[in-house]
Length: 61
Image (cartoon, rainbow, N blue to C red):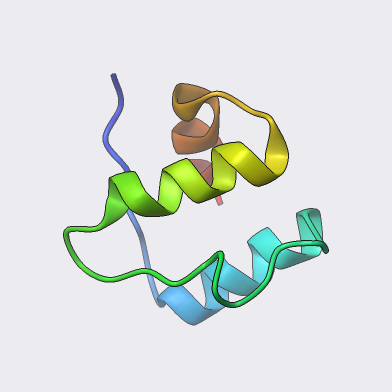
């Protein structure tokens, strides 16, 4: 299983995610260090995508 690697500023990355999934809210994208699983769980519920698919996508942004 891939590990989530947040490169650069989270706010910039959050903006890119919101562009791709406009229905996501700031609460959905709240990220704190060590809370990757919680963030990914929320994204899975909202997008219907699998964890590994989301991790690869976010790491590629």
